[in-house]
Structure formats: C-alpha cells, structure tokens
Length: 214
Image (cartoon, one colour):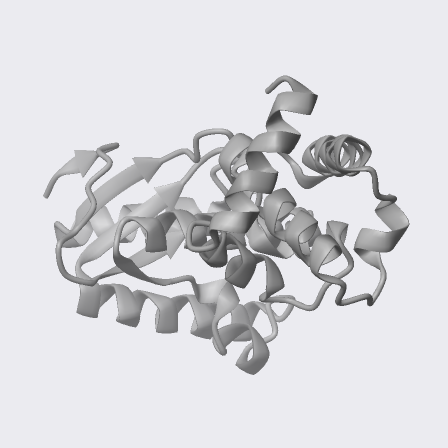
C-alpha cells in the first residue's frame, strides 16, 4: 500500500474510488464533489463518487440501515479498483474516515488530495460575477445581454472568453460557470473546449485582456 499526494496523469484511463464529504452542507458538498470529479478526470482517471452515483437514489442516507447498505455497495466498488482517493479541502467526514480505514485494512493504494485554487462557491461566485462584469465592461456589452438568450456572435464569443478565464484563473467548476451566465449544464465545458480552436475568439480575448490589464 502507498499513501501519496502525487499529481500523476495516467497514460491510459485509470479507475479510482473517490471519497469526499456528503452529509451536512449537502449543497456545498455536491459542488465540491463536482470539482473533485473534474480534478480526477484531468488526471485521466475514471472516478467513481458514491454520492454522485445511483447509490444515493437507491438508498436513503437518513435511514441507518439503508445508509449502511450504500456504504457497503461503495466499498464493493473500491474492491474492484483497489485505489482510493480522498479529497480533503473541506473536512474528513465520518464516511470518509470509515472508507479510509477500510482501504488501509485492505492494503489498497491511497491518495490524499486537495484541489489547487478551490474555494467555497459562495466566495467564488462573487469573484466570477465580478470577472463577468469586468469582461463585459472591457467588451462594451452588458451582463444582461450575456445572460440573455441571444445567439449573437459577439455575445457568444464573450461567453466563451468568460468560461476560459473562469477556468484558468479560478479553477471554477463548469456547473458554477453555467449558473453565472444563465446557461444549461454542459455549456461551459463545451465553450472551454472550443476556446483553443477559434482564432477570432483568441484575438478578442487578447484585446479584452489588454483592456483589463491582466
């Protein structure tokens, strides 16, 4: 067994069991779980997060007997992967401590991780809203126009630029970025992927950066 905090990017997709907090502030913890999932995927891992799986729909976490069944089902997945990753920016929950003890008793590979640049969504949300205002001011458009349904090319380009900068500067989750620009889930991910392939957008991005003095 090894315990590490390494940052390995695997050559081939590598399945891992991912543990993060769930009970308590569930809204915060689910936002954090998404950030954990994205961090894991960035390492070419295939993450399994129990509370982002069907287990939370099948078992009632508030019922002790069903909670125990859910935990045991998660451990069965860990048995297949033999590699457990614990994300610890917030807290070590009771469930995480139990999973850690189990992984250690089995001799599985264990990693403890933090997410560089991660912040609680409430704090990060205000920073992203300011970033959007600054970008819109530099581009000479209103925040309302960017959040509206218009498909005008100029507005679409600004959305792509905002998605790129929010990811690069603040490591924001795609879900939170989508909320800021009032878009359906998945839009920010597509825009971030597009950003490196459109020369006109990059030219506009560099103009905005100069105006914002970034």
